Image 1 (cartoon, helix red, strand yellow):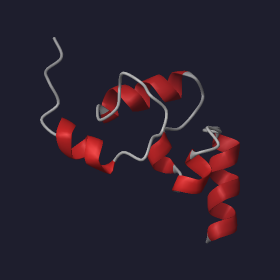
Image 2 (cartoon, rainbow, N blue to C red):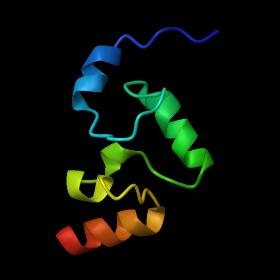
Image 3 (cartoon, one colour):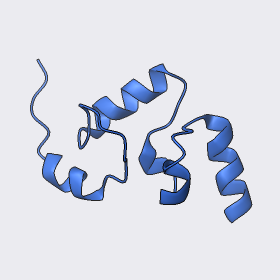
Image 4 (cartoon, one colour):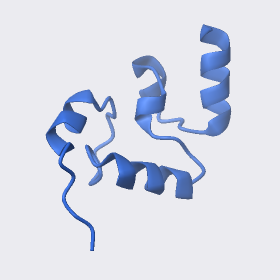
Amino acid sequence: MATACPQLEANKQKCNCTYPCSTKGQCCECLHSHLAMNQLPACCFPNDVEATYDRSFRKFIETWQNRL
């Protein structure tokens, strides 16, 4: 049985996701959900890229390759 996340409120404060979803602040659930769709969660992207909702691995590599 899953237990409530003790970091839920702190996670919500740090979460840069602008998409309304039921996993906000529940990082483990969010990560599992996105990985199942071959995506990464919003927190892997800078705010300007997150706003595009392109959470693909390709976009992640493209984003960070150009910013390093």
